[in-house]
Image 1 (cartoon, protein in one colour):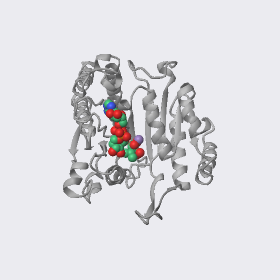
Image 2: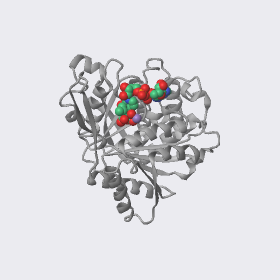
Image 3: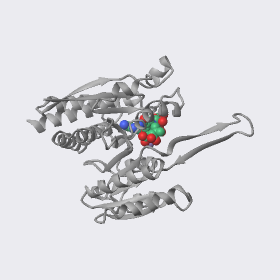
Image 4: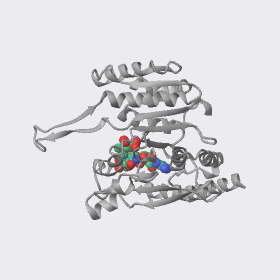
Length: 358
Ligand code: NAD
Ligand code: IPM
Ligand code: MN
């Protein structure tokens, strides 16, 4: 029987709560005649590790997870440590060197969940946001000089490369092709940003010629927020820069009911390195330790992990279990307006997995 090695990195805040739940659910799934087993290796990297060791993960951290089949990640972000230190020390320190350049964020209104948009039906919002995940505004290029003097200056330089833009456009067009509507929206800001975003648009148009079966359009990012709210049914697959898609994907999650349900796959399509699966949300300092974190975003990310491993049947079984549970408002956590707790939702999903197998 096939055994997959999964690196579990819960990180900080509610990351530890939702990843524990995710591991439990994945083990329940693998335990039931799924035809594969999972071996989890747990890594205690993050804010607490930083306080002891002065870094978010060991120097050879990536070597310890390089040969795993996938990574299940929670969140990097600790109330006592600057956000840029936790982010660059852990999440980006994995995503960027492992060239997980395609960040894929599907979102739709799951059964039983109410969108804050009063006019939408569940089927009106069914999107996948493709986020460029290796460069752009997150290139990490810049610096500060003359700190604490009136002459202080700082830059964050967004870097866009032809190779980087071409590969994410191709990825997005291919993904659009795999979905029934075959529709891609390219998000841009080429009115104000007159160099890199103009190149972004030109490359989109060039790559589009390879995909004549795909309908595509272009939206300025500000107007895109309005379209997401007022005409959600006109969108399907979306591609955007690192920062634009970061912002749009939180908005998308909220429009589908809660940030707590939204999943992410950080994909290295060439499979040279492991890919990483995590909820869209972060450490959620305001609810940490209360036992009310919504684990659905992590469960849905686990569906994407299983799909990436090629375990389609198990992925489908887990998604059905998630949808059976969200359909029942007794299992809604407070972010969805309910009173359920993380453990209650987790056992309900495990029960639904077992029912489906019986
Ligand atoms: P956040 O996503 O942690 O929280 C935003 C709001 O959504 C909070 O009110 C929170 O309670 C709520 N929320 C988020 N996830 C939830 C869940 N599963 N269930 C119920 N409610 C949930 O965003 P933030 O407050 O901007 O960031 C907090 C920290 O997390 C920062 O340090 C940030 O850098 C970090 N962060 C890390 C990641 C990551 O590593 N992937 C992602 C986002 C934010
Ligand atoms: C996300 C997060 C991160 C990002 C934060 C922690 C910087 O918001 O995964 O969406 O912007 O990449
Ligand atoms: Mn984000």
